[in-house]
Length: 293
Image 1 (cartoon, rainbow, N blue to C red):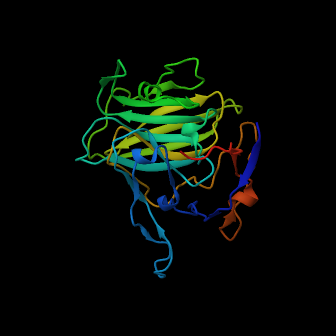
Image 2 (tube, rainbow, N blue to C red):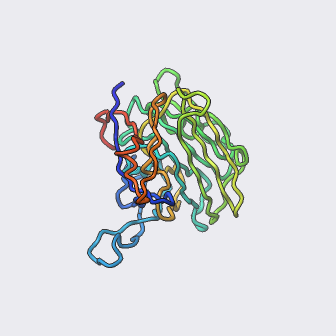
Image 3 (cartoon, one colour):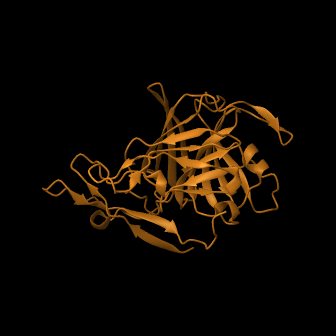
């Protein structure tokens, strides 16, 4: 497998503030175009004193109740930490899935060697594809081009097709509890080299509600994932995602397992060029030449 290093220059102040805001205007939809409608908000001016400067969108809504769809980050890597807020609009109707993908690459819905994590959350249990699917928050690993049934049930319905969904865990507190219309949840993600076994990676997710946070997942991954972060909906419309200002780890890409990251002292000026000087690198599989669907 071929790898390349992406060095990202990011200025940090002495307080540790990150450099660049998430801008949903730069993200892209993935999946069948008629199955989704991702609408970023107007946002704010990048330069408040320059009305001609580009706008930064910090909120996006997916309006269509349809097939699986992803709204994919323009950042080529997985942040070490990331916080996103999400809710399903109070008047949305239906009771199906919204969530996130981690390690997704453009075109992965049609990519036979895709490999990414899927966090999805169902509101109400129901029978579909001749099986009962309970409510709750799930973490799965997706490979290849799974069917709608695979994604719905978090299974490999056809072991011979080289694609499927492996459910790794259910949420510690919300593994059998559905989301609530109109209620906004805070999702705090972490991803990095495992502190015990540096050859493996660890994924974490805490969910906060009404000021109370619970670590839903703390999952050791036998094999790392490479790609980008994105939002996900399946058979659920009117899902709203937002970012408060900046992604706290967007410039601090995770290194390949077993690769040392050397600490760099903060210069007296209180500023440092993190990516080029500190060697905090993001690793990414070479794009596989699959176009977006």
